Amino acid sequence: MKIRAPAYWSTACAELAVADPVMAGLIARYPDAVLGNRGDPFQTLARAIVGQQISVKAADSIWARFAALAGTVAPGHVATLEPVTLAACGLSHRKAEYLVDLAGHFADGRVEPARWRKMEDEAVIAELVDVRGIGRWTAEMFLIFNLRRPDVWPVDDIGLQKAVALHYLGGERPTPKELRRHGERHAPWRTVATWYLWRSLDPAVVQY
Image (cartoon, rainbow, N blue to C red; front, side, top):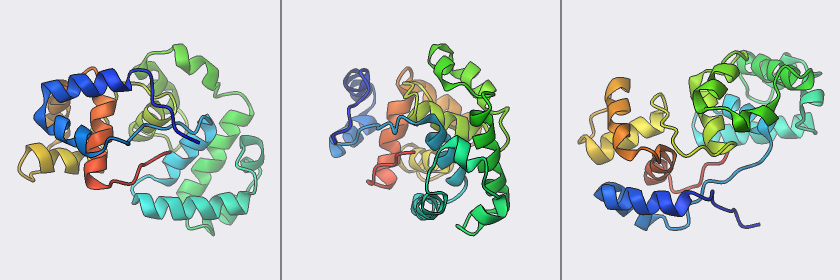
């Protein structure tokens, strides 16, 4: 099934390309790169937790084992699993606990995804980081991959740091403050800029 790009994607690409020659080159290099959406808020957040501080390849492998073990990747079922059982999939014990806790938040209604679509980015982030195991980076991945918000710039993301260093700073890794300031040039389309900068490091399309 073909992934449909967000409504803003073509406009964002055109404006980024005009404003920045690096972005123009990356957009031209990866014409088929599109921000997908799995559509399931629980799985998006669960995948983001699994992917914390590990490579995409490792995260995909662990997720596949977790999904096979769980059978049904739904909050009501995952909430009943023991963290020690999930740890056998290659998850750290802490991540296993986070997944069970996240499932519990969904299952008992403490988390209600339907209302997030009407909330500002920072308000959604504030609500998400109240869940155990979800920090700002994970919340930002949710904004990008599930809500597909157009102007997210995850300064704590290692891939984004590496790509900005490579293309703009002669290989020198930026501090969070420097990276935040750099991102201002890509507003209001920082999600799209992030997406193409990720592609420059790994052409494989990431999809949480």
